[in-house]
Structure formats: C-alpha cells, structure tokens
Length: 324
Ligand SMILES: NC(=O)c1ccc[n+]([C@@H]2O[C@H](COP(=O)([O-])OP(=O)(O)OC[C@H]3O[C@@H](n4cnc5c(N)ncnc54)[C@H](O)[C@@H]3O)[C@@H](O)[C@H]2O)c1
Image (cartoon, rainbow, N blue to C red; front, side):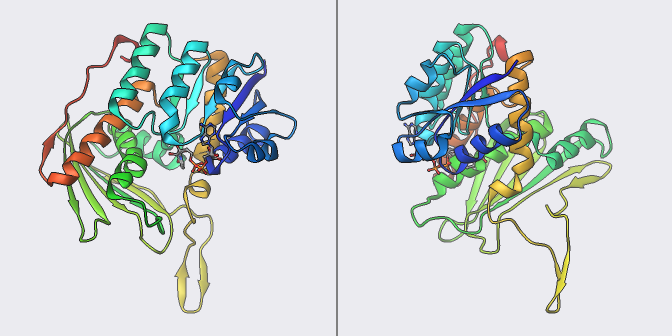
C-alpha cells in the first residue's frame, strides 16, 4: 500500500520533508503540500495538490497522513485537527508552545483511544544516538551516572532570546536525554553567561543521574551537537560527524556542518521511513504526544528557572494509560 502524505509548511524543514517523501521514502507518495505563502506552495508542489489552508489539506480525501512543518504556534491546533480527522500526523517539534496546549493534544488523543501523533524529535533515529543507547542498554559502560550534552549553533538572529534557545533548541536535549537514559527529569538549574549566551543547564533524573547541557547559540565556528554518556564502567560519546579528514595550511581536521539539516539528514530520513511504515503496519514510532508534552512542559519550567537561577523541582502531569 502507498500512503498518501500531505505536508503543511514548506520552509526549511518542510522542504526537506517534501524531498525525503519524493526521493528517499519507501511506501509513500507526496499528494499535497500547503503553505500560507501561495507562491511557495505552488513552487514546491510539482504534481501534488497545492493548498494555502492547512485544514483543507487535512480534510482532503487523498491525504491519509500529515506532516506538520509550519511555525511552532500552529502545531497544536493542526495536530488536533488531524486527530479529529483520524489521520496519523508527524508534527515537527515542539508539539505546542505551552504545556497547557500540549496537554490538550494528549487529552484529544486519549479520547480518540489510539496513538495518531508522532512528534519530530528525530534525534531518536540518529545512528550515533542509537549506538550510544545500544551501548548503555547492552551494559557496555555499566550504569549511567552522567550525560554531557553540547548544542552549538554558528549564529542566531538578533531577536533570538535565551527563552527561545530553551523552547526551540534545548527541547531536543530534553527529549533525547529522557530517551537515552530511559529516565524522567526531576529538577533543573540554569546558569547564563554574561549576555545570556551560552546557557549551562543541569537536570537531575529520577534515577539519580545528572544531565548537563551547554546551549550556545552563537558559537561562531559551525553547528556542533555532541553527547557523552558516562557510566560506572566506561563512557560512550559521539565521534565527529564526518567521513573525511583534511590536512592543509598547517591544520589537520574535519568540516563542521552549517546547520541541523546536513548533520541530521540520516535521522530525518530514517524517521520518515519508520513513520510511514508505522502508519500502514504499525506500531507507533518515535516521540509520542506524551513525550511532546513532557518536552514542552519541562522547557517552560526551564525558562522560569532561567529567570531565578535557582535549582527548581519540575512539576509534571501523570502519564495516561495510552502511553505506559
Ligand atoms: N526537527 C528539527 O531538527 C527542526 C529543525 C528546524 C525547525 N524545526 C521546526 O520546524 C518548523 C518549521 O521550521 P522552519 O525552519 O522550516 O521554518 P520556516 O520559516 O523556514 O518555514 C515555515 C513555513 O510555514 C509557512 N506557514 C506559516 N504559517 C502557516 C500556516 N498557518 N499554514 C501553512 N503554512 C504556514 C511559512 O510560509 C513558511 O514557508 C518549526 O516548528 C521548527 O521548530 C525542526
């Protein structure tokens, strides 16, 4: 069976999802695209239908499953529309800009009685993170005691605030740290450098582990995501994301990617293929609506902790049975 997929939002991420569906995804056909900018929708559509109204795309009979890659503020409302239509949805992170809105999505999915929502926390499909999790779960490094994360961007726009660094970037570390450690976060504390960038964010888990994350939005040299898991018997960490090393002008080294698209290209592709397969033969894959709620709820409380600088206990809802 070929799954008819519609993509909402055809900017940087949406265009990559469109490309993946056209060129690198088994069992899927791109049948519709939607962008608020009509010219953009038409330019990307090719032989797929072009919409400017996302609700019309969701309602279209040819669309069996939906990818949402429009701005953050649209995610919860459009995901609710997909649930109401009974269509599986891969929604880009974050699930919603606020914990309350994310919880409404969880409640709607629970009322529908089945998992329809996958949140695009694609690092779960990245081969390096997957190998680190396999090493930990297979006992290769003993019990995990620490996880060190680094999340650096070359440059952020002037209007990008510390709060945005948390809700837009650090949410990835919230999700991948919970997934890697199979643990829940219990406390958070944030230290900000003068000027507010970088941030050093420390979380504790319900298994007594410590998760440290540097979030540096203007690190100048390139896009650099790194993680090191420290166990009682050893450590496992990412190697640089490169296939070649260069010697020139008295230097030896490798190239950094410009941004997340080349760095996580494999993760986006593997995620899309796994999601398409899950829509037709199941079971659900990737981050659930509940995972999406937790990432957003924790991020919201990290932003509050950024303002106080205090070690703060996290307050989170209890998971409904659908996600246990
Ligand atoms: N998973 C990841 O690694 C990752 C990376 C970057 C961005 N994202 C997420 O993807 C989403 C899109 O980010 P982007 O960088 O592609 O943004 P972008 O600004 O490049 O693209 C957004 C597109 O959505 C369109 N749009 C706006 N409102 C719309 C609406 N109501 N209906 C339909 N289309 C609408 C815009 O015209 C634009 O073309 C964001 O939520 C962002 O957080 C995820």
